[in-house]
Length: 320
Image (cartoon, rainbow, N blue to C red; front, side, top):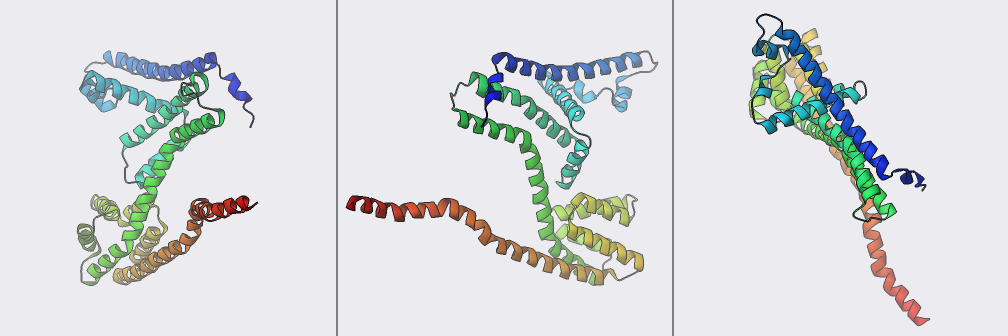
């Protein structure tokens, strides 16, 4: 492996990298402060200007004027770092992150801002890690061990937040997929017992708690707020993003369009989802032996070979 590029990282280069990172954060903070001050000076010449009007316009946040000095400094730093992340991320990345947070059931602007701030702080920590291991190196690590440690830390800082977010989305989707057949069974029984579709949903939500019931409750809330059932169910499908839920939503919408009995459609969907869950369980069971080969070959077989073959080798060598 060619390590000539490591010779370039001198103390002067490391200090310059750190200074550039700090200058970038300071530039964003000063720019945001100047924009805010300019807006305040402009509004100060307008008659009837007050803090509440500026707060409603989004120029001054009243919460920034409350709380301790440490909380205000922390909030301002978080806002500046978040703004830096929004400026230097690729186009569409923030929208994708927001969609993933919605699919993870955490559709809050504060959550997205904290995520972007975490990504920026992780990227800004990379020069410090390089300086710590390649210039200062108080641990006195060797070349390969040092490269492995630096690669691990940088990988955790750069790819860790995205991996954790994807894991949260996958966990929630798996939970919804497991609850879907049981929820459809209860929904089918309620409709066949004489309840309407919305009343059956209310009963199902109260009986079976979980992320799927939360999505049904949100869909009902949107419907009662004035949205059509089709729009509310399509929005629910976009928030969950699972093929099985998409099939259920399309079946219900087709039943409403063509006047088919919802009870019959729900019965067919419940049977199909139950078969689908059984197929998923069988697929995972068939993958288990293949996945078990890796720890067996890498961990168990070498131990067995050492226990069985080493005594035989020692005896053979002693006989000669």
